[in-house]
Image (cartoon, rainbow, N blue to C red):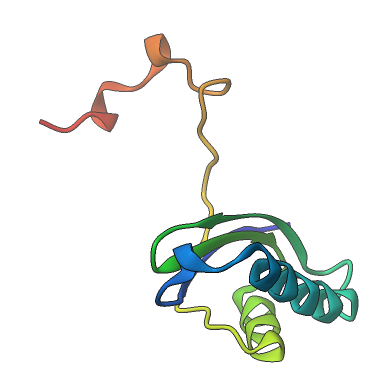
Length: 101
């Protein structure tokens, strides 16, 4: 199933309290229960003014539908082409074209 990274622009996101984040997750999980197993949340990253979420879903439209259901923005939805990390691409095997001068 395709994997997507969702960029959510939320001013002050980095200052949300634990209680606020729990409330957001609860609303998201409640909505996702109605869409299971077609859409699944993997993880999220919190930054100063954005939350980046990783989901699997059959298509972008389902991600957009979920965002509308929970009342949160999905400003950018990008399909993941490949996952790269230290275990899949050790530094001694990194392609030269990945480096920019």
